[in-house]
Image 1: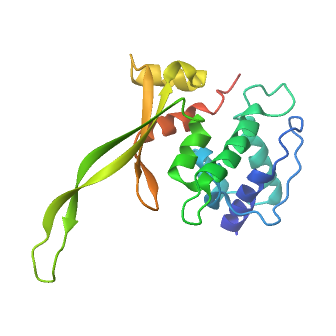
Image 2: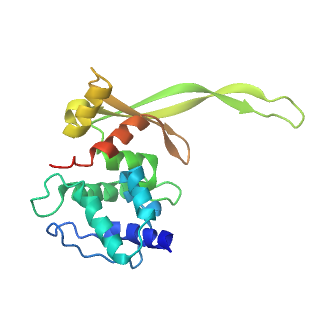
Length: 212
């Protein structure tokens, strides 16, 4: 049905040939997974997900893929798509740098941040005390204790970000000169605890305004 066709369409995304001229693509769904299982999902807008769910034919799927990247092409009159090229380069880097417990690095929180913002010019570490429950022996009342949480902080000077993203941050948070993403570093897992909004800004501003 339409849902299966949507997944088929989304599975084409990682297989686009990036150096081709606008409007010309070669793609294969062989061995590909759906967008929901791959790093391209970090770029998807909610309306694009809804649109994909309504796809009814292979032709619609191919058109969807072409339009997906066209909207993110900073210079559609030039051959290739520099945004898509940078995306796949960052995916490769994330897979190498941030795998966790058998999961692809590009599907982790740090991988997502690397894909959407690029490598951080500033890297800091800090610690903070956070509450931790100690259940103790059966029948005893749980006790509230604390533990040390290690934070990995990625800093980005706003002036070094992509111009559309920098403009959005200046609009939303006037006077901000650096943004920061904070990740909690656990033994087997690292997860984003602060800075989600900047990744959301990056997704929205990656889409080229119509008419440009």
